[in-house]
Image 1: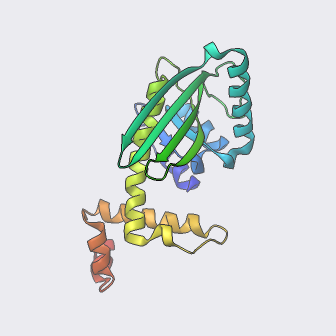
Image 2: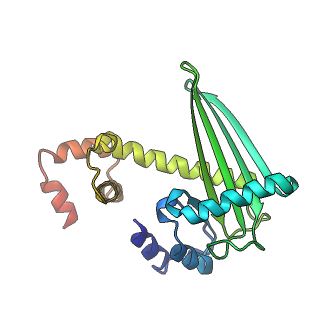
Length: 219
């Protein structure tokens, strides 16, 4: 959730030599203003920030039409597990552009196309990324490398949450229910890993029969 994210940033942990990565759920003006003063960051922007998405879309469309030489791009094409996945990232410097969020020196538009070769089915996704880093610190290839590293961490966590707690099969949809349950699953996985539990699935299966060992650890 957003509040714990801000608490982490304000916790006093030394962050100056780190790059903070966050998904769209955490991206808002208050968090960006806090990060601007503390540490390098790269944040994802989706439709929960409709004004910023509109502004970035217009910026890229205008630049592509008038000054395409100002756009730096990098792409990859991967084939494996019956899938063909293409990623193309385009980056624009924005240090002289008035964006809705402060301190942003670069923005990127990432387009990802995934095709299931057996069926010919295609899925397309487009997200924006923002950072306070300059191009000499983070180029187009660096943008994509950081985002793929984030995906790897996110996918590993999601696999645990779905395999152990059935997240994708959850029928909770009302109001903040999905976000609250996701936070509880994150806490449960993090708690078990922090206590040296390597096999989370086996541990949860055992706890279904006896919660005493969990309560003993919590104490």
